[in-house]
Image (tube, rainbow, N blue to C red; front, side, top):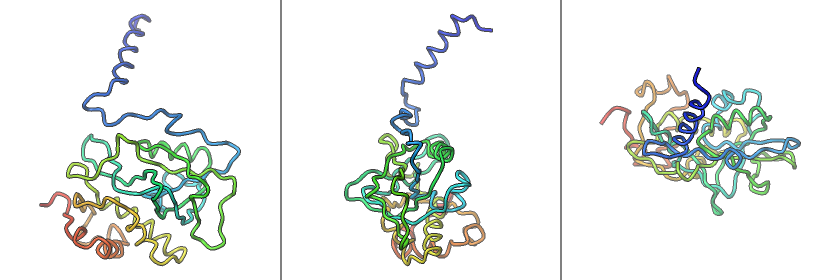
Amino acid sequence: MFPRALLAVLTALFLAACATPGADTPRAVPATAACHPAPEASRPQLIVGYGSLMEDASRERTSPRAGPAHPVEVEGFRRGWFARGSPVGFSTTYLGVVEDPHGRLNAVAYSVDAAELAATDAREASYCRARVPPAALAPREPGFAFPADAEAWIYVGTPESIAPPDARFPIVQSYVDVFLSGCLEQEERHGIPGFADECVATTSDWSASWVNDRIFPRRPFVHQPRAHRIDALLAARLGALFSGIRIEGGS
């Protein structure tokens, strides 16, 4: 056992080191209260998903009991490829959103309980959870409405993590596939023509720093059943940018 005085000194030194950002610090960890505000326990809770949370299988890994996802339009936020991942090992640039008075995107919203909200906070640990004003959230299903007293949340990028894709932090096709697969699920399920194309159109910062990391890239349907439709969407909207992406590990 350490003497109590020595243990106190070591603890103080450890805390001081954690509080001092260095060159290898991936990003500051926002204060919990500011980054993940406490929800009002008496109100229904909604999460607005705009990236991987749009896909059923991806979302259900974190929130298996969450309510069904409903297609929505969100005003006041802009989606783009600017949420930089950890600098440790191979990394990528993910989708993020930032507040923008002129921004608009399509997404999904779904009900969660307190435990699922906490689990999603843990999943999206490099983002902060921000409130979406009720007037900024519009269902895309005719006749559908969320509870009038619901609190809606969206995960926004932190200032220190926002940067465009580059060779060290590229866009990766496997993440694009999850995103657009979720968009296609909503388009097919609710009969909303062009919903998936709108996902591409309302996403900024598409970049030539983009690698194809699909498994079996010559037979992509083996790994991603919607590969042909996803590629057709990207080719139609992004043209030469999409045709120039390289196979991961290639030249």
